[in-house]
Image (cartoon, rainbow over all chains, first blue to last red; front, side, top):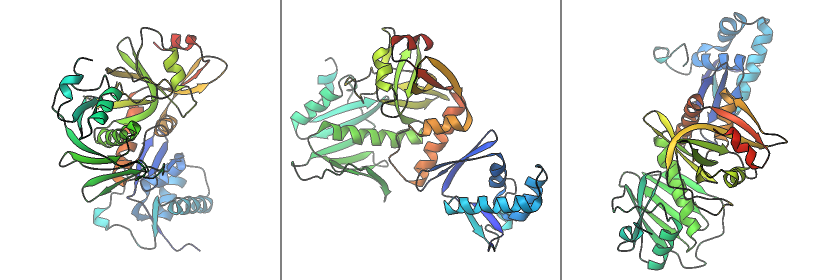
Length: 106
Length: 271
């Protein structure tokens, strides 16, 4: 069972949205990752204060024809994978003070 | 060569690559002479320099054969090290020191590293690419070893001015990307011409059965570019600068895949 609810982009990365994709480079080992369209939506919404299930419900299920439980399972696999590479941070608590959050990621 | 004698005074020589003058000092006159010969065409006639490096020649056998380059930011200095050199450079004081063997290619490596660090702050980079100016515009031909960089340089027609067959110098000036010649060469064993021109296109090289140009866009363009940018420092801020530069370049400059037969006909497509 997952022990996190919040996801936030690491500060040790450089990222750029290019069309529907997002390129992410780890600044610790220079490894380059390319996120597809759906992964890019989750990445952009990973602000540390929006719960992952809310991201899935409002950003994925609202836009794509996919069952919520399937989408959430896929999203969890994605964020855990990205966290494993040090690109995302996972926490059971909000990761930045709500007053400082930007709900719409750049 | 005109200009060389004027710049070589008191054991120093000013080498200007990409228009950036760096003074190199050494108390060994033979080594200073070898620098002016190695960088002929890039020796500045002016004594003015943006940065100063003191070169200390290490006795033979005192440095190692370690081929790994390590570049790190530490206490306000860049530290650069490989088996055949150790160097440090303080951008704030504009001064640095190099301890190296007599091998002039050690200095080559230090200069490449310094220029990558300087260019990153200006939105530019050094690229594994041959490049040439034709009709006032620069064309870059990038790829890994064996992709055809030197082949493209060798096949260049007489009206093309060769900037390098190995390491291209890309800088950003007034919102445009400009390629400049470098003395860094590959198999051609000849320095590029000390010229510059706005970059018209970047070609990612592939050898094939016919000449063909295909557009490369978005993430593929950035990936192709980043895979060929010289990247020494693993400093997080530096990585971000280079990443942003690559994204900006790919957004502004056409990136294309050039599949080519290694004969002169390929240059008919480069106009």
